[in-house]
Image (cartoon, rainbow, N blue to C red; front, side, top):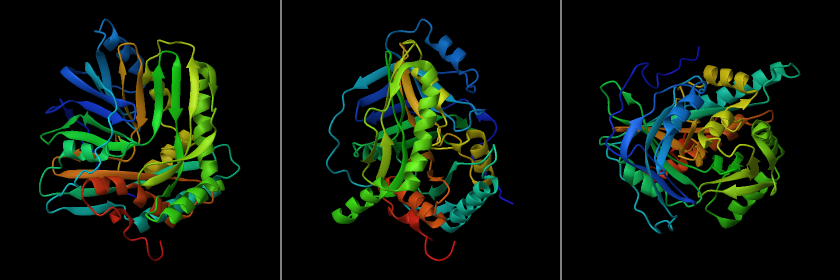
Length: 399
């Protein structure tokens, strides 16, 4: 029997904010909250439109709504209303010293070999249902690393280090306060734009299909070339692109992928990416509602969505909560940007839980998928001053 570890209590106290509730720092500039902060009434995707409409009714031009949508569409979101602060993009600092966590220890939940066994189980489920109406075509399985330190994890310093990679958007979002516990924040460096809206213009840049970057330039180029030619990764990626196009189509009078699928990169990973551009029928549609309609995409869940979510709940030992959800903001006009909440950690006092996932399709190799998740931990581990390959431990021997 697979036992799910508790991630957060069922009852949540009012948030206890000690800093701005959200900020996003990426290639397009920096967006952050300032001034008086009001927490929106929490609710699910079913009530989001009504709550956003009420919140934006009569607000000042510089008003901003930002926060996080959970992975589970039936879970409660965490959104904040405040004044916004915008700044143009600046070059990342050339050299940022790593953090040094005192007395840290790391626990993998599950470890790499147990994760590989879960991947094998997912592949068995796919094979058993092949050809049926509910056949599982893809599922994204995640695992986590729990880091416990002798002193509080410095979120601001961590964000500075994450933002030094100008191919990602570094973010922090305050989460609901646990009963009698320290504050929680979701902090990460996501490479994946879920939706950006400016007037009638919309843009999405899904990523699916990944390979670890290499220190040796020749090996790094070979990894990128192998990804570009991988049939398995292109099948995985196509499922994501098709789902986003299908979801956005009813909202748009023009929609397409003018550049096709390309290999893109962050400092630590290669990805297959497709830039999707469209024109909305309704310029007043808030970006957060488009994000809610799209989420979760097959890049973080699977195909079909409901079946994949069931498999995720059965095979992952740690509940996702806001990991693999969406984080972002929209202004008083409804314009804004929302990102897939990946390459992130939930930080609370002296603990940080890191997450990473991999897309599983027929033909996936369990140990290779475990290695992919280990590589995806690398950027956050390095920013925390820990060994970047710590997530790769246990990848030798049989799964």
